[in-house]
Image (cartoon, rainbow, N blue to C red; front, side, top):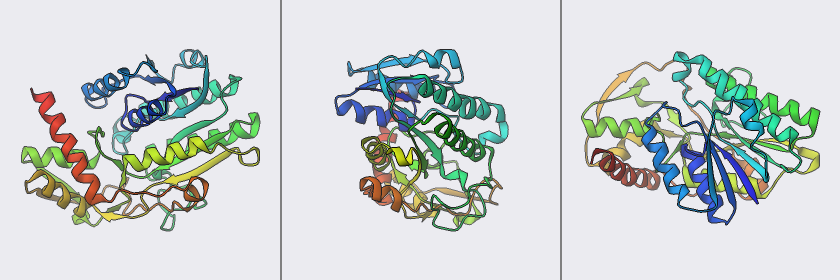
Length: 323
């Protein structure tokens, strides 16, 4: 079986590709390797995947419809993880989100629509679709019509496009709303990575609302387990387009994250307090009962376990790029 993984050079895409290869599946990875963050990290992920002969890679922009439509040969499933990530960056470069997240998603939908072999599209959405107005914990049937960022709005648009393509063309699809993924080989633009960088460099760590914000931090291995669970349980005809939260089901204070980073790094953080940006929610919390019912999803990694694992990798990576 051959699986197309978009965003294969990215954080989640890399780990998912590795898990599929470990199962003995053929993986076609796609990524544009843009310089949103250090390209060396993306190249290092790809190098590790490329050590397996069952991995093939094509560098392209998924907003290029014609190029995407040529990817379907032999592909039986698609795990679509490519996107322009980051909530705050969407305030600076909004058109990058329209291109990668909406036009890119539409390209993938068209690929699946015109393929005779692809029987399941799994795609990445985000907890950012909930925005304001949703009660905690977020459940999939909560309102998602008030996203507080353009990033969240593009991800909700992807869900609606997918719904329409299932209605019109019968595509079997599963959307996954990710909650604050962290771990080894992570993204430098994420808070936990930036905090580690700041602590090591002796720079201030910015905490909003004096660290009272809470996040449903989800370790990468648990995310991969959930994606593989969905992969193993494709939609039945009666429910062709599904949406699931995929998180840790345990919101924790950002200050606890910083404390664990301090312990693992052996250094004390310099704290700088600022008001919360409008685009940031006060708290995120995933109700994962629906995904648990589907495939037995049960997050295993506590923050006090996951953070030291990230730090161990981070220090090795930091040394590697400095040498």
